[in-house]
Length: 152
Image (cartoon, rainbow, N blue to C red; front, top):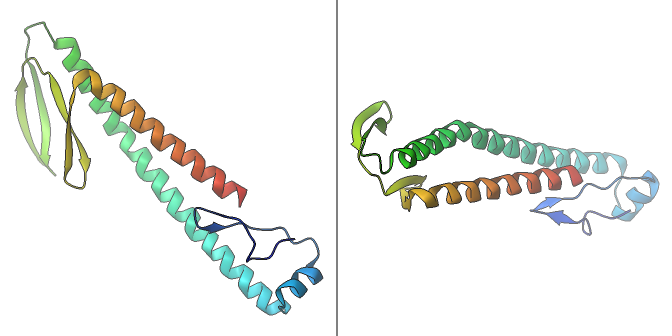
């Protein structure tokens, strides 16, 4: 049985320990039952807050998947049209609810909006590599987060 001071933390989340012998647990922490219950209820609330944050992060990432798939489709279309001499006509969102029409001829690169006023320009071939790599990084983080949450 480990005390809260020695409990392993992962990503700032204290590990939950199973209490086999309640009397020993209370003695080690020098707590009465009411104090221990209050401490455990507080810890449970902390776990619930972490869970809610992780679920919100997961929902946000899953909501981005359709946009990412659309972007990949556009890049694939641009690559397919490359060298044919045909222009691609596309409507794109300039701002929320405001669209512009563009005629794209022989696109060599695309710009990806990363957020936080950051945009990067990639060659069309490099975009697929970058997108797959970034997707993989997000998936690993989700798995690590889920694993650390389930370990608690």
